[in-house]
Image (cartoon, rainbow, N blue to C red; front, side):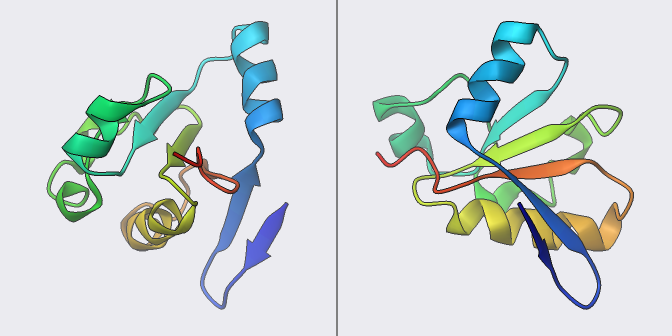
Length: 102
């Protein structure tokens, strides 16, 4: 699914599709934009870069491959992508649709 804004297109990926990427051995980066406490309580293996640290730590994002961002409901990850696309408009960013729900 794609959501179009005046300046960018946001791509979304479902948890089921992400599982297929894992099974197929697709090369991608997974980034958790939640808080450290949320990440410690439950995560799906992503690199933790809390939303408020994202721009400062953008060098940790592997822009040469698809990057999937996630949070609890999918809202913070959408914000993360919006912020990053301003600086990296050609990046292949995906929002985990609906988040991880925990």
